[in-house]
Image (cartoon, rainbow, N blue to C red):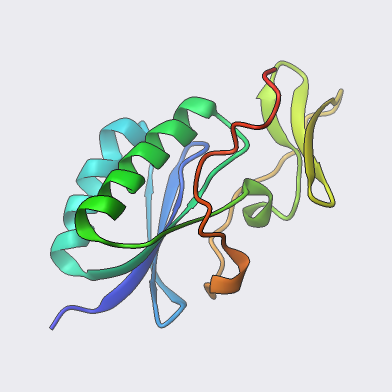
Amino acid sequence: MRKKVDVVCITLTSPIMIGIYEEQKLIDVIESEEKSSDVLPLIFEEILQKYDLQALFYVNGPGSFMAIKVAYIFLKSLSVLKDIPLYARDAFYFNNNQPIKAIGKLFFVKMQDDIKTEKLETVPVASFQLPDLLEYKDFSKEAAPLYKIAAV
């Protein structure tokens, strides 16, 4: 019998990170430097052969709009086809609320629940991390990408 797992996807930057969670605990991490559009189908082909997926979680922004769109379309399609619920959370949850590169010297910043862009002279070093414990309550069933953020 295959393990029942949840999968968390962070696809905003390279490397993309996929976390496999059993009973809410991180049991495996898959990383790839390849483009998410190229590698997500390959990674999920292996995951689907090995595990029984219970839920999908992903970072819905802000960040690279193309990366967000690719992840959303892929995961939403998988969600509908396999009847697996899809949940989302903003990227700040995965990087200790650090600024996220937008374009040029503009960065996305989050203050309370408001996400906006700010010009920063010093480029902050922030990396994304998968949580060791998956807290369902921290994610939303509203999984659409964060398109409400102003274009930069």
